[in-house]
Amino acid sequence: MRVLSARRLGHMVESLCEEVSTELPPDVVEALSLYRVSEESPTGRSVIDMILENADEARRLGVPLCQDTGVFTVYLTLGTGTALDGEFAAEASAALARATKRCSLRPSVVEDPARGRENTGDNTPPLLEVCVSGGDETTLGVLAKGGGCEMASGMVMLPPGAGWRGVLEFILEAVEEKGAGACPPLVLGVGIGGSFDVAPKLAKRALLTPLDEKNPDPVVSGHEEELVEAVNRMGIGPGALGGTVTCIGARILEAPCHMATLPVALSVNCHSLRRKVITI
Image 1 (cartoon, rainbow, N blue to C red):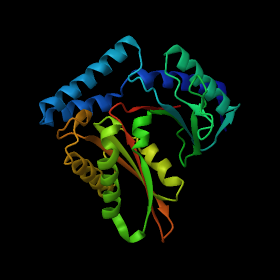
Image 2 (image 1 turned 60 degrees about the vertical axis):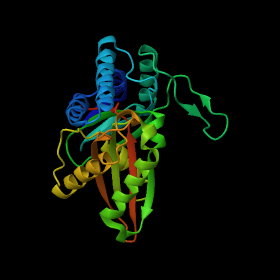
Image 3 (image 1 turned 45 degrees about the vertical axis):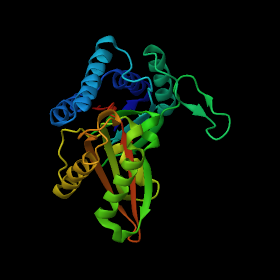
């Protein structure tokens, strides 16, 4: 039995929160650079240039990539034969509070959302997702999402006969309605199946998948490519100023579901895809 110290994990969470807040992942930088070449609009290319310059400056100065430093989700996936020693939720929350202070992150979390909406002052508590994998590998990940792209996300329960066409139609309608306010170029996480509560978790977790990793399932990989191409035909463009690059990547995760349902969730992310996953 392998035992992991919750306190040690907390220090890892702190480092990850700081890193994702100030450093755009290499695969995202690469995707932006590649799509910059194909962008037909001079204004669109200028917007992508500014995004890349902002990423360079944020990394160099150690400052947040965006003024909306987001809500943090911490993902802990325990490998077989691995246990936790200590209160991981408390350690993760304390870690985020320290990272917020050290990196001057804007406090963005409020309590009692439908009532007083009091700001917690330090971005705590983080959202936690802890699960057990079927393998030996234990991973720790952090994803920070801003409010604009969260407001463009959504979920729907489709009839099973809707199939992939129905899934695609739902996503395209959502992006057409709210994508311009989500700071494009976008990255789309899609969750298909599971249940009413599982599909959104799949969609959000899909954003952890590197953009330079091809889906091993050729059918799903084809759907991801089709989705990106369809969104880019909308013409929303970088910064919603028009152009041929509205989306730089889409990732799909699936799960079994009830035969009478087709749950679908869309987790929209802005060009500042702030995430990192490490193996422990």
